[in-house]
Image (cartoon, rainbow, N blue to C red; front, side, top):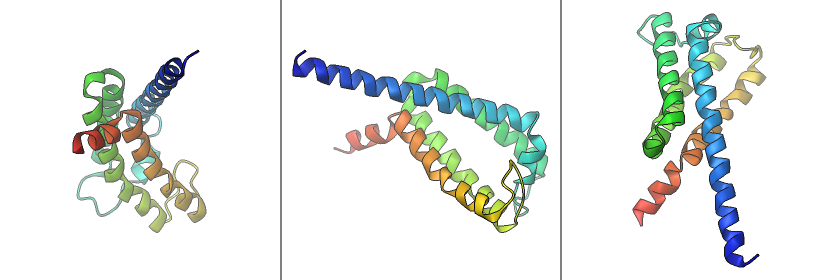
Length: 147
């Protein structure tokens, strides 16, 4: 095998890993969105901060529909994956105050029944943002366009 063959194999492997992770994130969002509308509705409703000026149920339904749309976009809008990646990352940033509210108000949901578990969860939100930007190549495309 030549150096060129190794490079091509490495690039193919990196692309395959990104595609798998984008697929997993898309499935995760689809499943979470369906959960918003069905079996986990009460759990999601418990997480809606009191300061949001809409009914808790409406917030859960709207965020569930948004998650399903974002999940489907990750799976099917391949040509638009850079924009989808930024949109998914933005969505994860926008729901972060709900996670903070769950900690501050000591709200139990999804097995997060201690301040320690709710605090640990906060550290996973940036990972989701990075996951969205990395798996869609949105960040690398942005950096490439800046040059």
